[in-house]
Image (cartoon, rainbow, N blue to C red; front, side, top):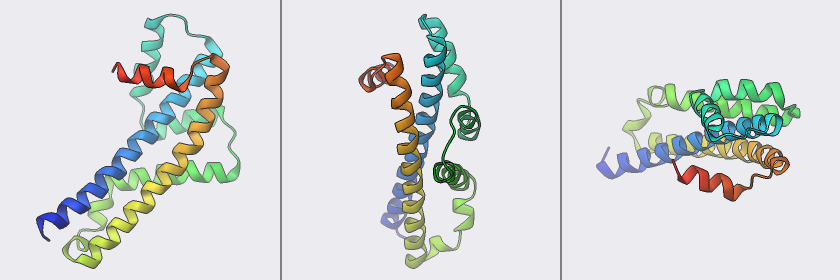
Length: 154
């Protein structure tokens, strides 16, 4: 495998892992929006405590909490469950599963195709969670611009 082959493969992996982190952030934002909607957090200290608590959760833990408050249609549930399964596979098993594939151009191509499919799964779940998040935020008066401004402070 040449250095360029490795860079290409690792770039695809990195972009996919990044999209997985974006999905996890969206799940946390959805939970924060739900808490804000139901408790009307008024102090910055309380807000920070909730954010810190949510940030410590894994994607699986976040989804478990989301499923307690969101009643997904079967297709939506399948979308988020598939994303969780693929996220765990990506982080814990992807390279181990493809150890021999890395040695050939065809194998690396197969890996990149799989990464693109995983990334699409993350994007689908992210879009679904984002719609729910925005719906919740509209009831609190928090806008997407407020969220972006707050995330830039970190």
